[in-house]
Image (tube, rainbow, N blue to C red):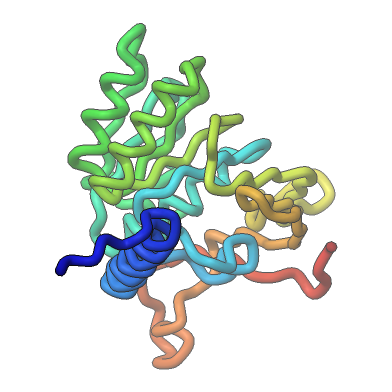
Length: 238
């Protein structure tokens, strides 16, 4: 004789079994995920991005084009193809002074009304992109973010951007190098407030010095190629 189970008692047990199986599968999938890839950074920039410059992420940089270019310089020096979108007045000499390889830099000064299309196309082939701010719908920003994650292309926006993984805001800036009516601007001092998505803001003071000698030159006593350095100032803010 076949005994039929009471559905009032068997249903909860079955649901519990299904839930446990799904949770086990989720844990297995999470354990098999590859770690997020981080990109090279200039010395000292990790002070403002402790988790590193992540491939496929989106960053909003406010108040300093130099800071955005410094973020681009690290990957560029390691051979990554990079791009600049919607900045017709960008000084390539300044970019080269920060150590950016102009032979691997793609410039699209005026995308017109095709900003989103051009940005998606650049994400397909370039490792890091700096872009001027533009108006996009939240849904369009989400689609571009998905494209960036898929291609592991990093977007650095010079202004606000929906769903940015972190916002870097240069609140103060100063230069050194000028004497009394003579001299040249050398190092730039920046106070940067970094706010990760869903996190608390923290501030650090860094100095961008394109004239600093690289570590190899210091070790050997011979002057190698000039490599810019970001150095922590003696005090930290925040």
